[in-house]
Length: 346
Image (cartoon, rainbow, N blue to C red; front, side, top):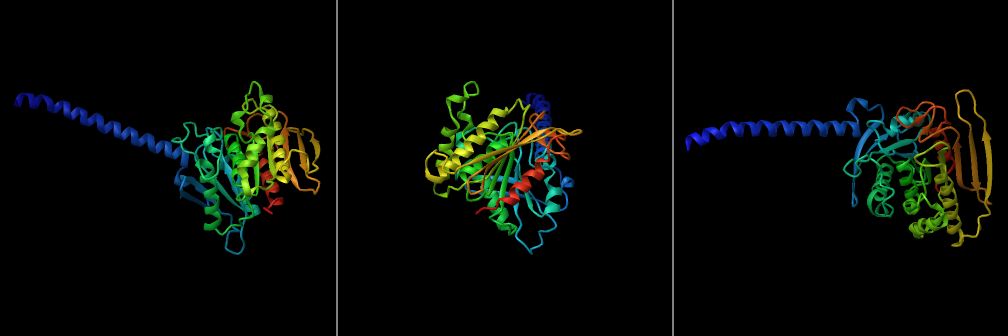
């Protein structure tokens, strides 16, 4: 028995060593993933604050950037910026770096919110806007992000009538969903390389089988008694092969139909909409683009869009830093802010 016990001791020691190595590797990998997703302490700048929202739908990590104007003398606007796939809110390849909203916020005086998706929810950090379970009020990602927005308003005494959401790619899809599920929270929506509410129902090989009006009816139904026309800004690359321009064209028609249904419950152009398009030619190192506005007869905005020639799947702007930026495009962050500034909730 003693000989058997002695023979087992080395094996136990090796098992202990292997277990320790495994635990160490898991810990290192976990720390690495956390650093990629959530950033490192020394990457935080002046005015940055990290938070975790807790609500009935779960928890959501986010970073807030407070401009110097956040001194208690005025209630500031809020812009929530939602990243796309293979991005983070404020870690590696972040929405924070891509948009450079912080410097704009410091100049203009608004609060920026960067939620970040966890790989436990999506392995490539996409927002799950194509999942019907994530397209409803009071549940999933819409509830979490609306909860974050409300928490920021309360925590920092921000202006609840000037809470705006902008998203890129899958984050753009989520932003549009927020416009449908929480029109009482978000004053405007911006979609950069994103699509309509219920886009998952549209067959890419036969998109005409589901009309934008079909999905518009669903978005309108989601709004319920809170229904209001939420101004929408669309920015789309003409050469985007991930989210083709047709998706943006459908989104404009879809959101226009939502506004029409809100007006009197019928798709009858009761808003008396007017569409105007302006072309901006290419300049040295800059893409050409077209700017289209769709307005109601009372002059209120329904949809405003930018189609950028020569641009792929990217957030355009001269100063962006990340995998999905295009420095030759118009300054999307500036455009988003000016659009938001003109459209507080009414």
